[in-house]
Image (cartoon, rainbow, N blue to C red):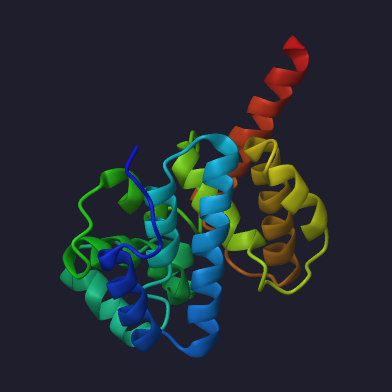
Amino acid sequence: MCTFSTEDDYLKLLSKQLSEELDKKRYIHTIGVAYTATSLAMAHGTDLYKAYLAGLLHDNAKCISSEKKRKLCKKHGIVLNEAEEKNPDLLHAKLGAVRAKEKYQVTDEAVLNAIKYHTTGKPAMTELEKIIYIADYIEPNRKMLPGLSEIRRTAFGDMDKAMILILQNTLSYLKEKDASVDLLTQETYEYYTQSENIHKSKS
């Protein structure tokens, strides 16, 4: 594992750049995710540096306009699915992974994938991918959503269960809003609920 310090020169430079590029609310959220991800990494024995770095960069493309997101995706060959066509805000995750590599010189595929899948999730996520997905949902600055306290407690003991709870909330919210659901989010939910059922049947 890499040594970790928030005083690392590269991390300090990233924080400064992001504070200038993101709006105030998004930057506060970003710092919250970075520290929450690091806490989850400590709890689950995952690399602290990678967790902090991925948390710091997870929303680096969030404050780009929808029109520019579309143009940048076209430039980088990112194909939009139906949900992304209807809601270009979803593009910030895929685009954020590309920008993390090209603009912020991140070469670690584990970190890049954690950024790429932090919005939709995906089946069989790595520990780092789950950490960023969960940290994005539970960081301290989030408004109090239904079940959030339970999810926060669960996340530090069983990330797979926390994934299920978050995905349930997300899918319910999207259904209530009659919003498009990214197929990958549905597949992620089905994967973890099936895995949980298999685990229960064996215990």
